[in-house]
Amino acid sequence: MSQSLDAHQRPPIHLRNVYKKFQKLRGHDLQSDSDIIDLTRPASVNQLHVKRSLDSTITQPLFQTFLGADAEQSTPPSASVPVYEHPSMPGLHAIPSLFPPDVQKLLLSRLIHRDLSDQAHKTNVHMHYEVPYPSGHSFFSIAPSSEPVFLPKDPTVHKPLSINQFLGRKLRWVTLGGQYDWTEKLYPSTPPPPFPPDIGELLQGLYPEMRAEAAIVNFYTPGDTLSMHRDVSEECERGLVSISIGCDGIFVIGRNDESETDSSTVLAFRLRSGDAVYMSGESRFAWHGVPQVIPGTCPEWLKEWPARSANEEAEEPSPRYEQWRGWMQTKRINVNVRQMRE
Ligand code: OGA
Ligand code: MN
Image (cartoon, rainbow, N blue to C red; front, side, top):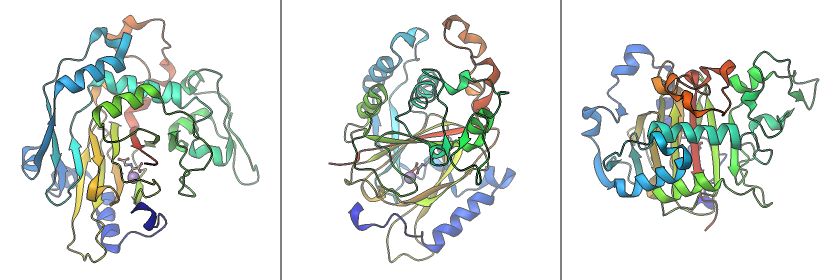
């Protein structure tokens, strides 16, 4: 199926219009728009049905294994969590607050301090710049005030970038495992670096129907968007897992029916830190995008990241990244995980 869909095709006009509407919504209109499905509001949840529930006997051991030695402060045992589906979007499964705060924080550290600083994992910045890896260290070990260290491949076109610009707005994605080429919209034929095993085990434990083979980690600052697209470069129809961390985002998804008109189904969700979305079945190849990331919505316990918050002082001797305190306050990170082939 995916092979017959063109990754370069333009989205239908009515979806582009809905996307534009949510891109422009601000303030009170954004908070009160009843078209936005907010998984924390009963009025929204009432429109959904509980497809299944994910029991804590499955989630807790996975979280404990992932946290490993970091588990002392321990995740409070959560009850089973509901998996929601909208009647007009079969296969799209949303789980609000699936990931507890300590799991989200450790996931961020693994993704950013460890995986982003692994040269095998390409970023959007690699296309035009030589990326200076701080050998074996996080990019956050570089002082924000340091001189520009990213040199352009073509100095007649691009100016050197500072670490502040790189971690500020220039870094838009890093790929793990299969190195998807967002520009060419394909997976290269050369063997990919191994998918980070700890993250793979966590996600496959939650979603045993898919193998975690490739991830796109998206970095958004309010004002950044992800335009409407379909993820059709995978050569199988396995589900896709999408995890949100940081600021809230509006996620728009429309059904893929070629005969559809203006009245066809489009849904908008407000996704929060810790939410998981699974795109499978009829929704797997649906048009979707992120028209807005909402400023001022990063959860309190995450705002100081990558610096440690007051109650984390015990964890010496891990690096403190004091100079980058508050970086996460203006970020939304999305981890978008796929199986490439059957
Ligand atoms: C993607 C994607 C959605 C999001 O990376 O392909 O659709 O919520 N991300 O950021
Ligand atoms: Mn996508």
